[in-house]
Image (cartoon, rainbow, N blue to C red):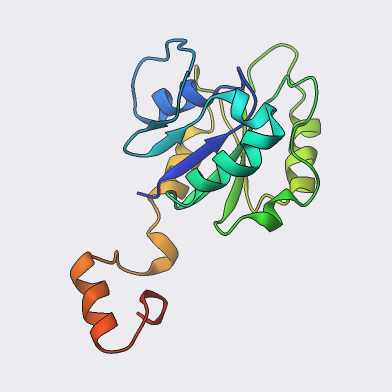
Length: 168
């Protein structure tokens, strides 16, 4: 399964999404530090809300993931992601719209923000009702670029032959 790096503002639903993806009960928990789970990297929203931390800290954590998820709740009052922000990333970037079942949800507006940010795919989901969760899980379950997973031994063997992991 691909490792998903989640970034978004405070209370956007990153931790709840992690719990729902893992099949756990969704219980509110304020994330105080970066959590490396088996399938996600969950970051505090304050990282995204502070431009100095966002540029340095979040970039570093993105290198430990297979895909980056820009996360916005469907009832966001404003957008933190500038147009074309994904051009700065060296991983595939998807958009995730959470809280789609909120009464004040505006999914089309949030979808437009994520399209303008440059997200390759957008997944509207609800961690509470699990709506849209299957599509996101199927995306994450796909093998990385259709290639078999590289092991340390395979990488070392390739280096001995003068190849890089990209040549495999």
